[in-house]
Length: 193
Image 1 (cartoon, rainbow, N blue to C red):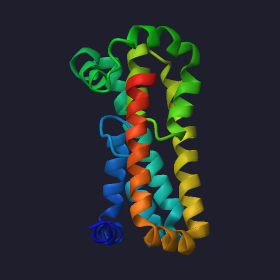
Image 2 (cartoon, one colour; image 1 turned 90 degrees about the horizontal axis):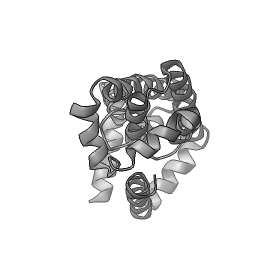
Image 3 (cartoon, helix red, strand yellow; image 1 turned 60 degrees about the vertical axis):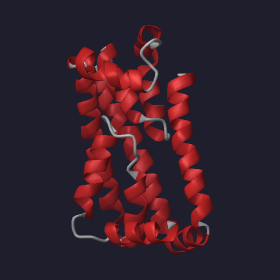
């Protein structure tokens, strides 16, 4: 089953509308969607290695725009939209304590969350809700997301065939590891932050 899902994803990554899908997932992940864009970025770079910079740029720009949407959710629609999303991640009760410290360390928080598998939408919404200055948020988001996606794409470009062979050989283990990291990000968001 995993092999057929992997083959399907690789075929989808080479589809003529795959770039729009990558942009859509990157945008959504930064504002409300729980699945990281790496799910599409990785197979797309493996399928189109020569376009790694274009794919990383699409992912980065769409993620920054999605982060701005998340910021607006936090700033303008906190009670109606952001509060239920934060409640979903178990973050509502800690929000006031978090907000007090957030602006002091906001740029570092955005940078770290943007580079890691931490659910980025929590940070984008919190940045808007706590009033982190928009220029600080946008600059830090651009830096963090750009570094993350360009490093991933560059590594895949540089080591593409061996990485693809490694993935195909150890698909079950890598899928399990990915699921553990994804769930771990949600656990960290819910219980430790």
